[in-house]
Image (tube, rainbow, N blue to C red):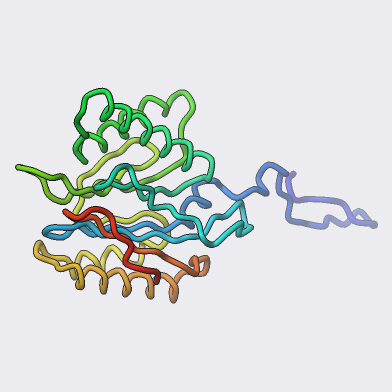
Length: 227
């Protein structure tokens, strides 16, 4: 029986037993230590991520930028295993830029989000990427404006007003839902981010120590600072 062993006098001594391959953290739990969140305003999108890179239970670095620009007005907020996170985001970005060079036109945020979902779905039954992401962008011209999408490693895609991923999102999404309104300003959104990060830091035992906030609007991508 697992967990049992015999003592000196035939007495049964119980001990905790665990197979070696179960000593590693569940990858999905490791991903969940990453924290991403996003807020779509009337004329902007604001995203926040932690800056910690971890391997199992070890912190490797605390200056990792998980908010990766796709072009001048779009970015990915990416979480997950380091290799999959970097490889997948670089693959999507390279193909989006190749499309722009070949056709002389940039893809919309919606088009990039659906292309990303398609690639995740294609890889799902072959060599799945262990990554969850947010896609934020601002489209110029008629019918444009801010857009925010949430996509997980199972290729589930949703257009969102507020979103998040990771354990930290458990504590902030209800607050975002209460405070968000269609005409939310940049200052209000940043204050929502600050309150959310404070909540994560105070409630989550594995909370990363540093977070960075970026905003995408008609002027492009800007870094608002660290929290």
